[in-house]
Amino acid sequence: MTVSKVCNMVAAMCIAMLMAVVSVPAHAKDNTAALWSALKEGGAFAMMRHALAPGTGDPANFDVNDCSTQRNLNDVGRDQARRTGEAFRSQGIGTAQVMTSAWCRCQETTRLLDIGKPSVLPPLNSFFRRGSELRERQTVEITQWLRARQPGTPLVLVTHQVNISALTGKFASSGEMVVVDVDLSDGVKVLGSIPAF
Image (cartoon, rainbow, N blue to C red):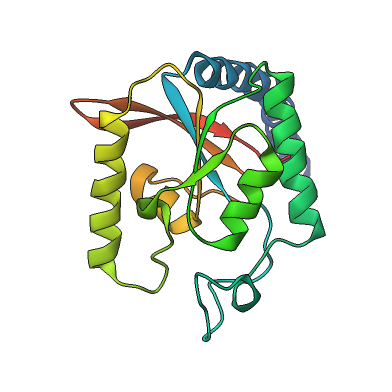
């Protein structure tokens, strides 16, 4: 194969990749609008990973009732949570049912969202490094809670990456929301995700 043919092939691949990248934002924007609409209608819900709290897991001396022993939001995370609350309001969702893990970083995220009084829901608590039995039990519990809930009011669940992955099979970055619908026969259906703000 000549150098000229190789160059033409590389150029064609680069153009195809560029076109694919350029076409993503329009599609993502359309999908995001549909996700916000589903949340506003109240049939779907947002499963949000707490805003940015640098690090992984919790310190060895972790105590769920003592925020000073936990990994907490930093200033970037606090701003991220506030911007997410502003995004909800800009989409016409001024109030929602807000449920949270007992972990301080989740509770602080919900307070800064400022779209409803948060309530602690134990199945949203982290089971990171706590075993597959707890993972399975809490995933069943949150699924049962969701199935028993009456749809209609927007719902936001603020929790941890491990909980989101267990229920939806999706990885969520700090502050990202996975939008989910509950199918009473098949469990949950992931509609998409809204990136962190």
